[in-house]
Image (tube, rainbow, N blue to C red; front, side, top):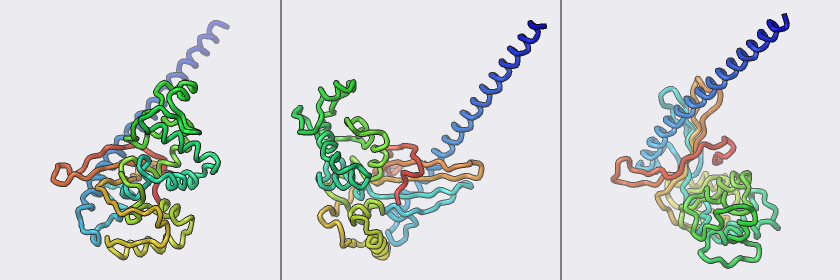
Length: 286
């Protein structure tokens, strides 16, 4: 009798394990299908958004500046937000005071900002001379980080994660403000999303909303904001950051993706995607 009971218990355990394994595989397949469908629809939305960039500013459905535009395609609703990379802060070229404001806005205590900026500058400069609170190769070795300082400019904003002291949480907060592609020391307010403008305006929401309304009414004409003058720049490279949130009737939550593109007029397709990443809905532009 005992042997029979043990056999039954073992068989029940094997059956439970099989059911659990099958359920896990089904969940993995569902996620893979969800991701593949989301990526395909996001790719379609990218082509649509690029077409909009070749339309006169006063006729576009998508506004450059991070405001949401909704496009319906193949039964899906896709929220598209687009900002110019020149509307973000260049991690290589920006004035140190501007980078200080970015770190401050993302919640870093002021006493911790200069040490982090020293580490960023040591990471990207070509020499081995360590700043007062910086970090060079030996400091990375002490933290068991073999790669060390890059000793070259950032090529992609993701490289910021390799800098000593930049935690994953801090990187996710900074990524909404930073770029490695604008090649400008300041911010072009015509291409900047709302949260970047709020940083420039020292938190003055009303001033920012009034400016955005003026910017929309100008239909592409230059509008100078009455805040942040020391950090403004009129450079406008054909490089854009896009965020897409894809919702379909058969999905419980949206697929959210961020990507950066560079326009290549005369080419087919007329753009190059050089950065793609799935992101949390919390990372979206305002």
